Length: 612
Image 1 (cartoon, rainbow, N blue to C red):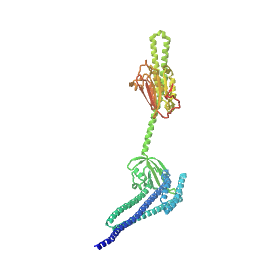
Image 2: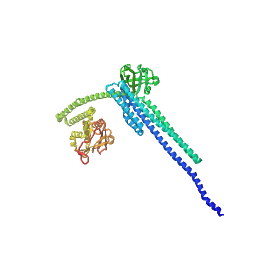
Image 3: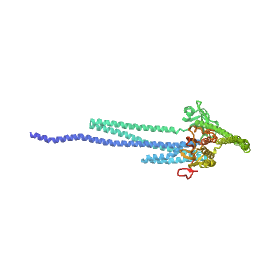
Image 4: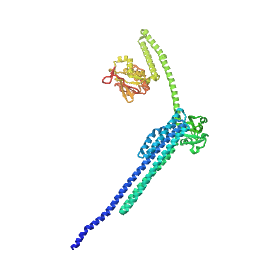
């Protein structure tokens, strides 16, 4: 009984070790294989990623090579266009390419800095480019300075240099393209190898591991297939861009027509087709007068012609154009054809016609205004002399009559004479007021000079010194600025407003304050008093002609003073209004544009005002 037990006990460790060894092998081998597969996979994946980066780098090099080629072609095309036509407009692409070429070529050198062969190729290419650019600069300078082109031999050297540049650049791109193709091939080979290793390892590990591995490989294959498709798409796009570049090189911003020596059309661009209604296929071989029927016969007999003309399109529509016509000559000076460059200026022509109409209307209005001013000045002269002189005689004789015959006329007659004298004086004041109102529009130049409102106020107060003394009024003011205005009219404006306050005062001591405040783009001025005030229903009427709110026996006046104030302010593009209540005084406001206005350097009292 014990022996078998011993045997079993003795055999158990061996069996366990065998099981464990087998189990360990069953586990460790697949694990090792998986690790090896993973390491191989990671190694190949790193290789694929590196190859993919190489493809991307090659694409960048090829793309930048296309940019360099486009800039070189722009310079060559602009130079040839200018040499053929003499039109500085053709130098626009040349000058733009000159500015951007060096940075673009430097970027291309930086992209291949890790490739000694391509770097050497670029150095050789740079030498040829420098030679051609010097040739282009010399040819352009000769054309600009002496209006001649280089001889055939010199031009042939330039052409050979450009051909060599194109060949070298094409060889450079081909080398880079071969490198890209090799990288793509290596990528595909590596992917296939990875798929094979993973499938074999998956079959060895087991069905489950194989199925999982195959699924992952299928997904990985699909991912790389998409990457390959994307690379192919980018290659196709690059090819399309090359074709597009070829088309752009033959296009221009203006309409272009070229003819042969028989004046038959050999080329038109899309803009010409749109403006004339002829397609390139239809226009080919047609006489230029059929496609571009405004070509002047004398133009093709001279070297160049330009001007503004009217183009009739194929469907009968007409547009205004501005064109330039030049002969195309060979090296011997023989005519090879004609080139016409033109653009649609219909909108500009319409605007120009409208501008001329406005100028004509403005001139007519100015003439009418000048005639009106002359008539107004004649009226002012008549009013000043022919109307006032009889009134002075009437007043003088009435006063003489009263003086000599006062005793015999009696009280009632003297009173009648006084009424007549007063009426005549008011008539003189009315004529004077109308004369001042009429003269406001006669002098435009004085409105634009820099005027001091302080000087205007001083003159107004001097003119009003007698009524100021009689009323005992106290007048104060803020610092007053300088503005662009007519100084005489500013004096008249302040004099009328202050005189109005002196006239309509109450029983209490009169106080008048002239204020000034800057508000945005305006100066707001005010003339405030503590007089009898104005009822609200009359505040809009008082600025009208001959509007009086009181009978003449209570307050004298003509009803024109505030009308003159309104006219002066409006002539200076300003506003005037009044705020008042009966028995509480009145404040007249007027606002004028700032223009060149500025405050003078004056010293004022602590309350911001100066007393007079």
